[in-house]
Structure formats: structure tokens, C-alpha cells
Image (cartoon, rainbow, N blue to C red; front, side, top):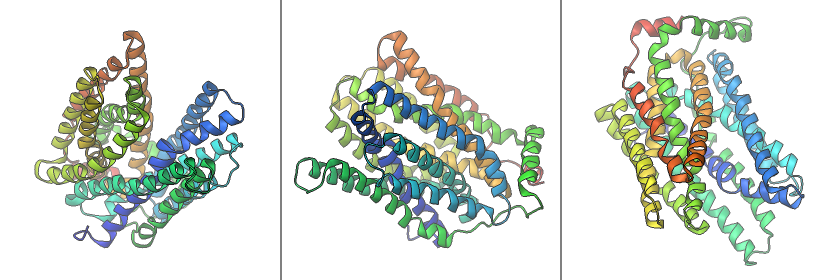
Length: 424
């Protein structure tokens, strides 16, 4: 970190800040808290699970639909920071509200959670786009990888603190109920997210932009329509997005299905939590390693390496039958999970014209969000037809093969003529 500029460090620290939300609110603690609240209110388990899925889908759909136009407006001078601050603030406020909503008010909890999803995802559109403002093209791979690495470490600290509060409360060691301890975890998440975003707000500014024009909203729609009309001029960008859609869908499906998969093969809850924690720790240095190797061998080659590793992961999962096997599988995931995500972000950032980074990261967000549909469906349908989850995980190889094949056709950079076309 000492070799990073003030702007680079400040940008990286936002990954450290918001990863606490990813782990505690979307993955580990709040889903269980919501299920408990709904159950206590008399909502059937199957219904609460359905409501949880619907809420996530609605929030994701709303931000995905709005992402391109928000990004296009954000390209105007002075707008990127404003939009980032708005969505970041939205996420912080509603995450903090989760700590104060009464436990039995499960519907209000769910609505607040939907706003946290919108705030988190919306801020990330502009955060990712700020990569072009904080560093040079040559350093993007390294800086993006450092961000993911810091995120993995940063998320574990409030996670350990929150889990300790909940466990100690459940055992009667602390004079708190599990409900209050969980609410304290939500407050810790909000405070952690807010505190470590201060450097980003203070030191990072929009360097590349489009000059403001009258009626920026209507003009943004015109610019976005112009992008689609000249789609052939952006062949490299959209070819990459198609490749990204397939392979990142496989990556995210492995992440989201890992707990269910582990449970299905008999891994205990305690072991799953330990493995989840270990995966976060191991993923940190490997994210940095991917960034360094990308500087030597190019990002595209390292992305293909990551895709190959995931093909091995899906193949190995088919023969998995013990806790040791699951540990090996988790460490393989840790070796490439952060790297492939970080290099995808930096690779795309190098392809986009800097003045239009927000517009294109809006599209990037859409492809990322909608990629969360195909993989789980493929796993579910294949697993159902074959009669076991292993076959479902194995079927994800299809996504990685398609993504890798398309990625091979994507050039490393756009040429100057394309950049001028986009900027105009």
C-alpha cells in the first residue's frame, strides 16, 4: 500500500469499506436474521424464502435498468462524485436502519434491505468507473486487484466481531439477546462502511468527464441511443461484455451455491463458516498475485487462467465426497475468485474511453447483475434431471467454455479511432 498514491489508496479503501456489507448483510448474518423474524411472525419458511428472492430480484432489476442512464448522466463534469455519494449514503442509512427496526417487523426489514441493495449496487457503478480517474492505464490491473484483496481482509474484521457478539450472546456470556447482538452487527457494518469511505470522499475526484450541457437527462438518453446506433464501433467492448456475462455467471454461481452445495454433501454448519472465513483470507494474497502476473503476462491471459481454474473446480466438484475435498475445492476457488473479478474490472476499464467510463460501467453492471440468472437455473435444472447437486455444479463448465472462447476474440485495447468515436 505504501507504493500507492493517495488517490489510489483512497479508492482501494472503498473495497475495504463496502465488503463488510457484502459478507454480513447479503451473505452471512442478515439472511438468517430475516428468516428468524419472518418465522417468529408466523410466515412459513417457504414463503419467507420466496419473499427474500423476490426482494433481491426487484432491487437488482431496478438498479440494473437504471444503471446505463445513471452512468451516462454521471459522465458529465461533477456528477460522478454526486451520484456515488448519493447511493453510498442510501446504502449506509438503510443498513443502519436495519439495526433499529423491531425484529417482528419482517416486511419493513425486507423493504429496508432492498434499499441497501440499491445503494450498494448503485455506488459500485460509479466506484468502478472511478478506476480510470485514480490511476494510469498501466497500473489498473494492480490497483483493481489490491481493491479486491483489501475487501477480502476488510470484510473479515467486522465479520469476526459480529459473529463473536452473536455467539457470546447466545451462550449467555454477554447480557444481550441474539436479536440485539445481530442488530449490533448491522450497526457495525454501517459504521465500518461509512468510516472507511471517508478517504474516497475526501481524495478522489472525477478527472475525465464530458462537459455539461443543457438538459443533461434528455441529452444522456440521446447519447445512450447513439451508443446503440454505433454498436459496431464498440465491438471490443461489447464482445468482452458477452464473454464476461458467461464466465462471471459461472463464478457467481459457484459463490452463491457453495453453502447449499456443502450442506447437500454433508458438510456441517460450523465447518462451512470456518471454510468461508478461510476462503476470504486466502483470496487476499491471490488477488494481489493475479494483479502482478497480469502486468507481466497481460490481463487477458490471466483471465483465461482463471477461467481454466474454474473449469477444474467444476470438474473436481463432481467427484467431491468429503470435508477434505470441500476444503480443497474452497482453496481452489480462493485462488482465482478475487483475481478474475479484479482483472475483469480493470480489463474493462482499459477498454472504455475514460470520458464515458460511467456510461459503459452502467452496461457492465447490467451484464453482471443479469448474469446471476443463468447459472443458478442451469445448476438447478441439471441437478434435478440428474438427481444430484454435483451434476449441476459440473454443468457450469459450459458457461466457462463459452466465456473463454468469446474472450479469446477480444483485443487487449481499443484503437484511437474507436476512442474518438465513443468520445464524440
